[in-house]
Image (cartoon, rainbow, N blue to C red; front, side):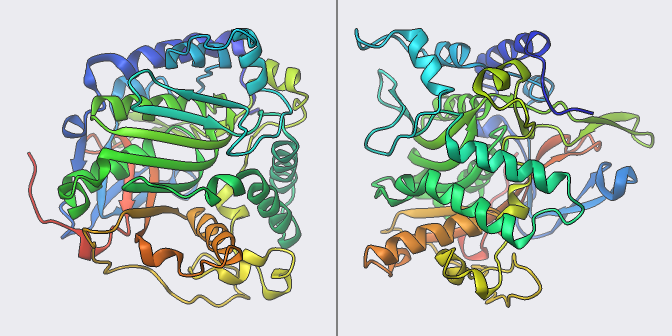
Length: 417
């Protein structure tokens, strides 16, 4: 089954998705279904595990997403022009026409933080988006090629592919990571597909931790290598509905989400989808950008971002700065898991999403060490949290996000109805 999306079939779904996300304050933090209190581990039934046989997934917390949004995400396409409309973007420069802006978003252009391909700030200044490169840039092409090669090879991401993949992502995002943040809360992420993982994490932190009590989430910055237009718009609306000032910086954009494969859970008489909401290319757009030989935009980024043995340290100098347990058997873990982090109310917070966030953390450490500021994280509260998109057939949970690794030292044991 091809991951390519035919635009003519899926664009109307993208348009309906935009409407569903905006309607009825569906994404207000207190309206979302949050399960768990931080004391007991949840058992979430996932029928897609074990090759469709199903199994329980453990979760510290679980945040369910609105059905009206969930049903429209898989297989959706939001192309540049529709995306600009959804942002409320208006021509602000006489020398650049609207259609040219849309073309720049899918171009081969390479930019930087100070000279991005696209930059937008809402009139109320509560939302901004900075896109460094066009979607057909040289790094994007190489990343897609490596992802395709790994998918078609029984060996998957070999160390050589992994090293090249990480170098391309580092080159595409380095100037974002290097730019100092003055936000109270900063998220560093590898890829942003449907956006629901970040919604789940921010909802959990706001309602169940000291971070919410400190109101750090009033001002959030997200730095991400690749993001879909669906994910960006969902987070923009999530921020608007919850009074959050949000700034997103992305290496380059993508425009399609995979439809997934139907899985029937006979016990619960519910159909869910496996491999839904992966970042994919709309076919006609891929042809226009010269990327029609590829399907997935980034592939399995978690696998590609695993650490490597020491022989790769010179070529990928961030590799020796890894301090996580996402590694190959030939590289020892330092087991730095941040399990009991306390929150210093006088410091801003930086959060990385495992698994890919471990590599992004190493990228950031390497940049700061080069700048002779090795003690980067002394100025932050640092969190590493795992958020796993899950399509449960159990009606208590439904489609949502399984949250784990929220540090015990941050939790406030309150019960919400």
